[in-house]
Picture (cartoon, one colour):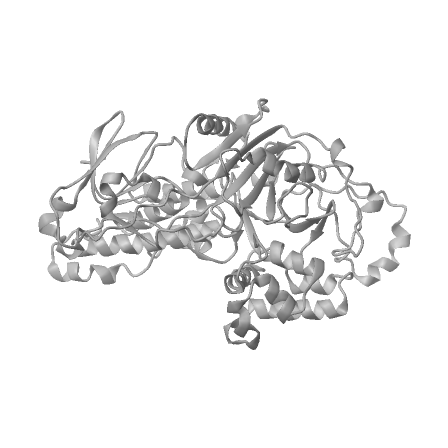
Length: 579
């Protein structure tokens, strides 16, 4: 570190902050990135089992407003360093803001991904695969011809530019569930699968328009990298992606300081009438000074970027809240559970992928030994409301399974993430473990392979067929942790001060995002923070390090020089990113 002076100081290495840091560093600005934790990722971190245990113990013994009802099992399995466990797990659509950022920034070369194998709906002890493509619908022998036509009509509508279609005219006044039943006549189990497992709705009353746009993004992701629209990041997913963007920032000159507590943040006392008064001649007037515990240098910058929870009260009048001061999701808290299993979840095969002519040959192979069902390595089980005894009657829960193929567990082990949005605010007595235990038990009942004679259920059978042994005989997890995650504390209303607001607070990431949506929301929030930062720095006459000339004409064209979120990659970066 040269003299401790930076253009921007970013506090926290969550996904939003990490993408912002990489973009600003690549644009040529001087960035210092700080995190009081000793690991990258913030609230989306990927931790080893040792680190997770330490995190749980710290949160359970503190009064942290972000996490409550934190608990874990006493016994800890071996090989703790070989686990990568994400605090905020997610899957990634194959098209969207975060994939674009991974590719355009070259960060994709720092990580690895695999396709999500399956998405299924839980009902009466069964998992039913969800038809999400034309191929699924055509091969489904257990869907009536009428329902196939209705489903195909909806999928074609949802994947297209439906805003100009007549079916869309009433969408803004309907819930998505009502839209499916009233406009496309889709009902019963097929209706439930589309609402909760294709659209990843939390509640049946979610409005139709945003859900339709979400589904369109999912459907348009099919085929880009394979038959699944979703990718699963290796080594814990979201946290590893955050670290990749931090690495890209460091390569471009970003300075990183982890594991140091912030002891003070001060701002120049000289007041400016507005942001336009910031100029090259009075840059000292807008300096922030930041000191760290056990760190001798004082860091200074023109701008600070952080979440609302890091804004000191005495600097709240300088905060510029992007995207409003309220979280975007209506469900503010989620109950989360993490379980380590030594048996994988079994997704029963469907009969929708066997052509008719293959059935004629079944008798010739009847003497062949039965095939062993392979456990799921990367898949999602959706529990609609009231689908599990003792579970929520209001919200849908998801169980996300990752195994050895995601590079997040040792051989023969699996991580199960359970997420349940809370429709009502939790109280002090609310227990995350009690809320999530029914879903854990139901999933554990699917880890023992069912008898071969019972593993041919229809996709949406009219009668339930139990595929798994009773829950009483289900295996026990090797380790569990439970907690409730709340939204970041809301900032105080912005006052009417005319002083330049140079403390940027990106749009908050609410915990209750649909499983595929948090990474894209973070990338969108990061881009907004990037452009706001560039705007303020340009008005201050602060130039990227690759353009330190004092030529006034070039300074006036600085806005024009930064035209894209990510600058074009060099030849070696392009070739590495394509490998």
